[in-house]
Image (cartoon, rainbow, N blue to C red; front, side):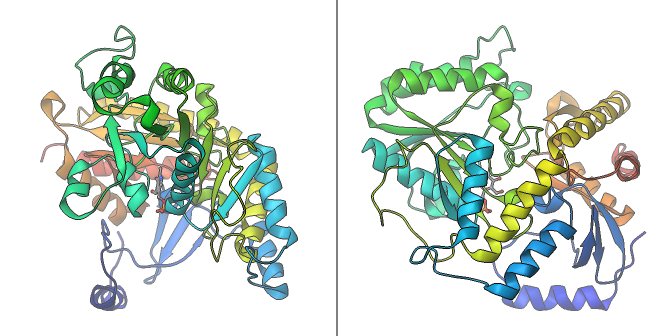
Length: 428
Ligand SMILES: Cc1ncc(COP(=O)(O)O)c(C=O)c1O
């Protein structure tokens, strides 16, 4: 059982006074980390099943990345990469192109920034100014990315929004049309041609369809393969671009470097961030020579191509490949899915277990599939007390996204803690 003292309480109080607008699910004040374990300021240790929101795929304190960053630190921290040339960001761009098969990269600092670049590129290339995205989608919190994110309420309450029409994602556990896969014929995706293109937004005015290969923040929703294949067909037949947001699902988390590879679909523009920097802020927007043909100066930033981020990113990608983290994600992910499905047999609270590789979600439900949001939050807190870091997603989902280097012993220990948290709430 973790012990909390005034050391954490004091930092939390000071945080509350000067930091704004963040929601923390619990009072964890971190101090250091190693591999798949985080230590707080009191010295309590936690197995990390969240990887700091799918960022730390390579694990914490990775020696290879630390060495690359430290040696770059000795040479030069930053150069204005939009004004000067430098080799390390070029090497990173070459590596990203080599791993994905795209021709060009725009380097940035975050997921939202990678999405903004993708949107701007799609508007510029097609000379159209609207997009289609999905309910429950999450693409970031800058205004363009927020327009794509799938909560209309949020846009309406506070923010002006770009021209984005939302359609239904293939959330088969809660089919919006009350149909069942595969008999449904992926009715949800056909809504784009059946209704949106006819009644709301003509294809001639649609620059792109933006989609997460697997919805992350929306609840770890894995669509059937045909969903993405149909999206590709709709884009091809209507001369619309397909943007894949790989920010959470990329970086070998699902076994493949890009999660879209699991669906056999190639997007026109890809957004990456989170894990590709190994914990250092890094974003990348990738596309073909043809699409990324915007003139010099059409898009730029101060910190894209930052030397430390580029050195860290390059070392991260090399580490991921040399340690075969994709294979590890599949092997460990299959094991966690099997164990979670066994728990599902014993705990009616677990309504659905779904995922690919180490991008796994367990949806918690009451009778009649009512989302068990409160019980989910209690489980997450109890797990923390027992030494396991979990994070929520969607309405009542718990995500299982540990570092890809996590050991079998740590997985078993983490699942044991999860099981006892489940037991403690099942009869509440
Ligand atoms: C799929 C997806 N896109 C975009 C973002 C936004 O990334 P950032 O928070 O780095 O701006 C996130 C963050 O969780 C994400 O999961």
